[in-house]
Amino acid sequence: MNYIVINLICLLLSFSSIYPDMGEKAYTETVTGETTINGLKIEEHTITAYYRGEEELVKRPYLNATIRFPQISGMKDISVQRKINQGLKDAVTQSLNQENSGKTFKLFHDIVYDRYPFFWYSENEYKILSAENESIGINYDGTIYFGRTDYLQFSDYITFSLIDGERIPFTERFSREKVIQAIEGLKYDWIKGEYIRRYKGSFERYEAEEVEKLSSTVRELEDTADEEGNYFGTACYFAVDRQYAYINLYFDYIGEYAVLKFDLDDLR
Image 1: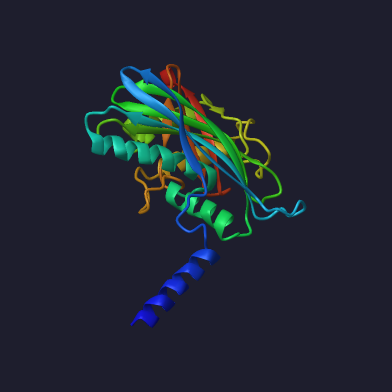
Image 2: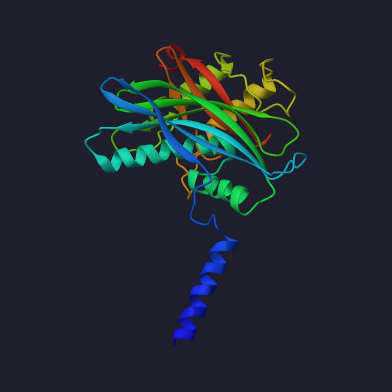
């Protein structure tokens, strides 16, 4: 029996020496600031992750991420607060690679500790656009490079309910027909970015064909997330400030995302 125990201990020790980093995080999360908007306490959180092989010429694996996102504190309903905060973290990582935070940080772990041959660079900022009317609206804006030939810029908008913690589609705030009328009346702008860089290079020309595709996209959009809670490709998420509404759209015909900017008066 003692022999078996000794062998088991030796096996565990050898296993831990081969995998000394198991259980350790591949990133750090810190609170870098705090603000209060309309009585809502909001902390700024920053996740940083860095890894590079010792060989100077090795490009993979490589990890250099700085991810910024807000977290709410002091809500009476802790379960709703927890749901919103997880959603805020998932939203920014979905902007980076269309995966929630758990899958994204698992990839970070694989890069650092399993030496997964992946190249990952990302950095973002965020802006609180509104925190009123029982909701909070966020803009995530940043850059990511994960092994493609060039950088991908993104600017995403999302609104969370302060009542139940759910993401709110634009159809709960605005009439779908009003949005379509604004599109057909050319009362919108494109938010600059590189989601759609592979298709004609620009949508600024308001061509009749593009207007029709936009209208059809809005008309056919679903209002709910997919089974994993992702809004990409299934629903129209949005945010508003005091003057404009920003609506994210996914276009099946080009396989890309973009943001339309509307004057609030044109959607009322």
